[in-house]
Length: 465
Image (cartoon, rainbow, N blue to C red; front, side, top):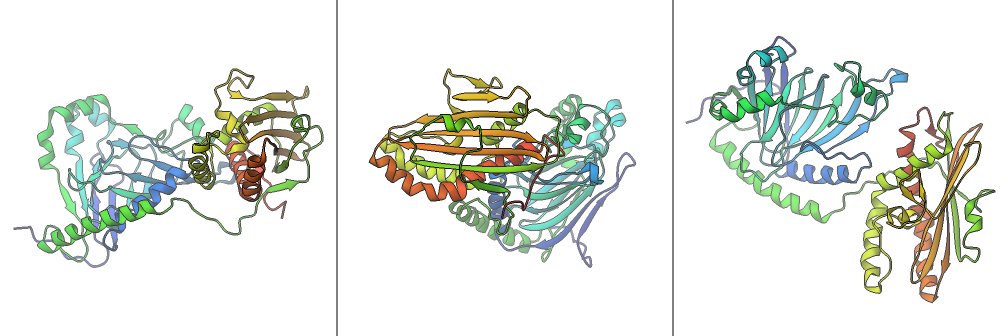
């Protein structure tokens, strides 16, 4: 027979007093979503996270930073999304204050918090268990959490054998520098290189060892169970939970049949199509008898102390790390279609696909394979030639970085020479999408990734209509 649950007006709330005298932990249940909604949300947002250029998969907590701090403008907060799968994740903590809003999976979630201090744990690791509290949340539930820096926490499935994900969350770091002492981690935050993983500290070895040898303490942990519509532990809630679990599995399968890409309409594009390669372009020296040619330019505002070769290295790295999801899907389709024809395949868009080659040719910056390179003596212009030969065509692409008094101009130009009629037909089929989407999108995302490392350079939005 279950214990009588209190009926409360407004939002059911758990407020856990700090064991060490710090800020309390607050968990507020906001809404009950439709059956299966939690699993579907986890599947959909998980696919979007994985396709995001800033995706980080670490500590069983895949995440993406979707809004960065701007310390020069006085903006110290950052926004992240993160997901926790069916296995949960390890106990950990952060130096700074945290608030997040989340949705549980279709099997519910158990939130575990310990507010023991470092001094208490140093005296006796048993303080970790003494400070431990659980908050149980129902399936498909919208909730929010707030706790102070240094709070140990772990998010786990409500049932140990559950196949449902634990939660999806939108987290606000109210001060990305909060609680961080001067040092390497603070430097990473100021440089814009911080992630949830780098801002995370896992349990000390002594506490982990104590927990491993004292499993029975789990039966004595104070637990608050929050619910809407049916008392926790009641037959009504058990029935609803069973139905939601089945609906969640169906929704997850449906999500797998749908794409994981996003769309933005009306975005000002900084990429401009040029009628011909810039003056002095290395591309003019390659493939003189071409059947297709295009060049795209992107301009950055601001000044930088970086050399053109340093910017070039980051742009090339950007092509490797920041790949438009739409281009990736198009390449998968293209590879499947041409593989029976024994044509060259690559997961990377063709203009720069040779960056993945394993040849013995020249390397730019010691790590990027190129066919040719040129760096001006004054360090203000750098160019590389990429490309490959295939059965139906040969292509050469030139990536150029030019530092001017007005900023930086980055170009991506491509020439294609068709080897046969099939090559001509192939180019006729793909040239439209290549010109309208593939090359501009790849250039934009690569440069966006590079710009993060070279403040105060910014994309010159709206210059090219």
